[in-house]
Amino acid sequence: MFKHILIATDLGEPAQMALQHAVGLAQALGSKLTLLHVYGIPTVYYPDNVNWPLEQLGKAAQASLDNAVAAVRKQLPDATGHVEVGDPRDCIVAYAKSSGAYLIVIGTHGRRGVAHLVLGSVAESVVRMSPIPVLTVSARN
Image (cartoon, rainbow, N blue to C red; front, side, top):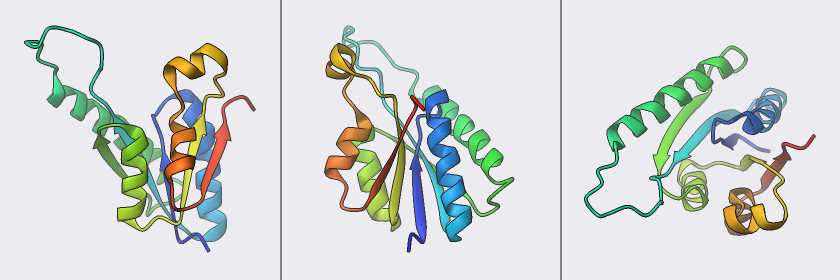
């Protein structure tokens, strides 16, 4: 049923639980698994002449994802990875559509109150915008 599973990860510790679920599902269902990491440009306000080290950010994101994919390939040799730059909310849904994913797996930090209002929820936005099923995995387990 789920021929291609997309795991959206920020490569942080809470995302590891979601990754474990995605790997388990892919193994059980014989699905292709793709790890997607989306990084954004910092949005703090600085003068216009600040040059962000975009190349270094991209290389660091790719290296981190490559390490995660290498670890997953011990269980799923055909696992792949992809890095995008932009707003995770938009990039995850767009990549899921363009890659032919049947399911998105994403971790949620479980923030509430002011933290949720200030930081928002990528997982919540993906659930609302995605045309395909989304499995959310709470870091609070």
